[in-house]
Image (cartoon, rainbow, N blue to C red; front, side, top):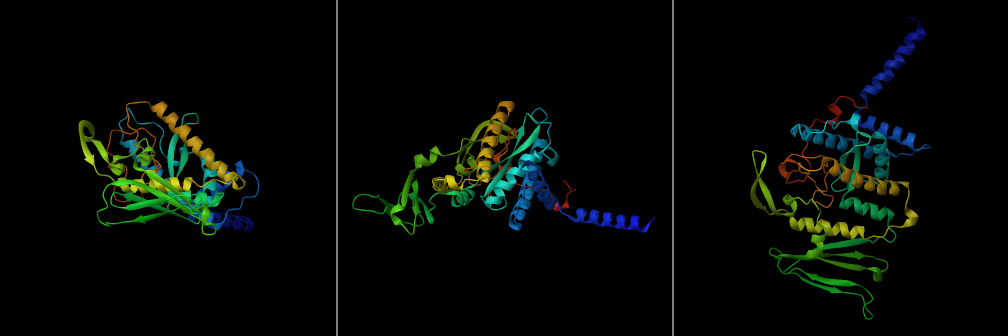
Length: 356
């Protein structure tokens, strides 16, 4: 072998070893940037922080796929879709564009209540599209980045029977909207009556805004598929994985759910500045429309005979929801009741066979 051939072989081996040492998250990051570049030609500037966020999207997405595939395999064959939840079946081009958009805002899927990932089957492409649900902390980040007149702070409180709350609205004699609030019995506040949020503007207090929500108002915002594990109420009893005619009462975490519902309403109340809207914001809006359309189509395709276990974006967990049809199972098999995290016993991404 010539000296030139030996040198070429050594260089190839060195490059091959370097690629092999790259972990799956880094390969995913490179794939995202490459896919995004193919769809949006031009110079792509991705900061080191954004690259870290993109790797976090890989870690979360990998967990979501494993969790969904475990549930797919646990279903009886008559309800089991043939399409496996694996990376090869994910629409990577769409995912790449969305990940760049959401990560540019600073939304981190590994941080509590920032953003959640869901998979839904696209019947036209026979691939899984990935939808993103922004959590209440993510809504705050979005409002601060794109808001027209963003408050310096928002106070959020629940009001109970023994509390003393008085709203002082703006009028001819009172230029600043405000309130008084007193807790008279810290450890036995009685039944929940409602809550409020108060937008605070330090430089111009005349813009301060008080919004009150009764318990009825909170109930209006309750998700369609609200889990009794969190909202409380009656749920069916299962025996041998089969639904019975019996029911049991679940206390749930209603007050916590009410608080988070008010917080979502508070930051959604911030008006978006049209001059700040960029391609990333448009991509967020498009993703939301695609996700809703995909979920509706899934429901039509799957029709009946299966229960959709749905953890809505306004649930206490703000965790991924699966629109794939599920067998009749308890919600506990999907969510950890203490942390609200989707259970995942899969190995670490770095220990897998390379995917990219």
